[in-house]
Amino acid sequence: MPNFEVIHEEESIHVRKETGTEVNYYIFDESELHLNKIMPHTIQEWHFHEKIDETLLITKGKLLCKYIDEDGVEKSCYAARNDIVKVHDSVRTFENDTDEITEFVVFRLVPDGKDKRALIKSDKTVVAR
Image 1 (cartoon, rainbow, N blue to C red):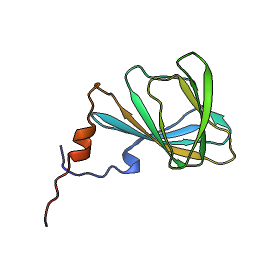
Image 2: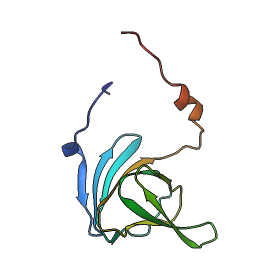
Image 3: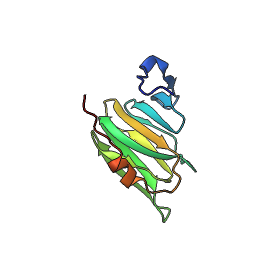
Image 4: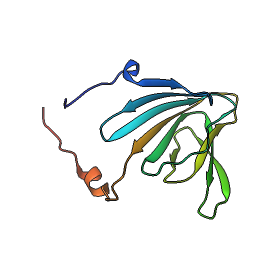
């Protein structure tokens, strides 16, 4: 495996979905990133993942997040630029109810149940050059 690489947009898998979403998929061995664009007045299908954990970073516009809570009640909230959405294992959908394109990055991982916060915080070695 190379120790540094740049993956260009043309190397991603680009999909235009019938639901009005455009996605560039960047798929790696242990993770995946999606660059999503949801067109104005568009809603995605309701869905969930059994093993994949998703975190969204809104980079442009406003996203209406709808989900089913632990009691089976449908709830909703908005997320806007620089907001993070942790969806966990919820049944959810995302909607752009505005007149502008909404853009966000989806970080997808398959968690193993181990708390890696200490490792993530401390795994840096400064090198003098």
